[in-house]
Length: 88
Image (cartoon, rainbow, N blue to C red):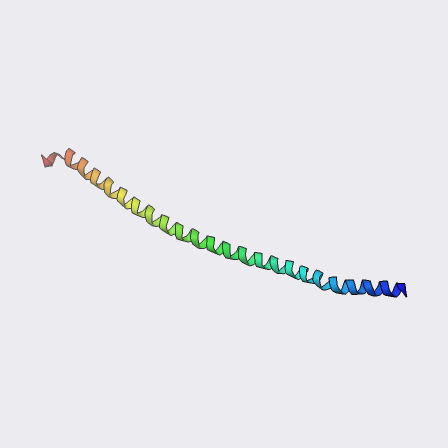
């Protein structure tokens, strides 16, 4: 009788604990999936930010290059004007 009572008590305890263990494993699995999705989203956001920054940098470099070329052309013209024998 005592063995039967202990057996039923153990069976009852396992019935109560078993589903919670299964739920915690499912929860951990879902947490890992969620973390993966969040990481993917963060990587996409970083990629978009990098693309935008690269485009802005390209634009500014191009603008600076054109400005420098124009100043070089001005300087070359001034030197030519000063050294041109026909202009005096």
